[in-house]
Image (cartoon, rainbow, N blue to C red; front, side, top):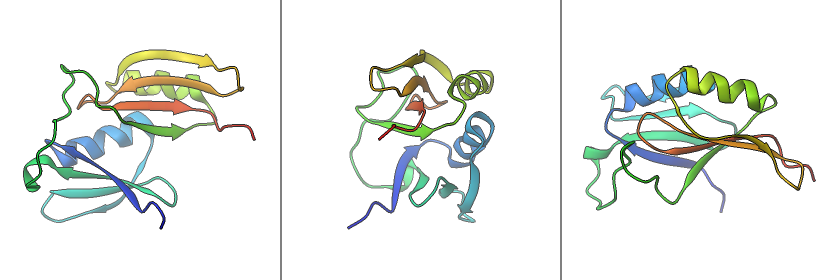
Length: 126
């Protein structure tokens, strides 16, 4: 098996796509004409959004006023500090500023407009 895409259930798919374009510089791969599903270009695994009302599953909805869910979206960056600043300027909520980890990776965290935890990090040095 291989990971094909990660889907985040959100109240407004188009608003989420627009936010990720502004905050993280990602590009649209596909938006269904219904506006209920979209994918962003993120390499071989797509980041997708689906309208939370379109699925008949029980799950805790992501909201900025609640604790973040036990999952994160990690975006690898060559310019972590600049991308952190850009995300905050676009409306992301600061969680943790860039910090160099003992293994050499620079990592920071923000929350998106829906309250989803997003890590912006440098590549892991092998």
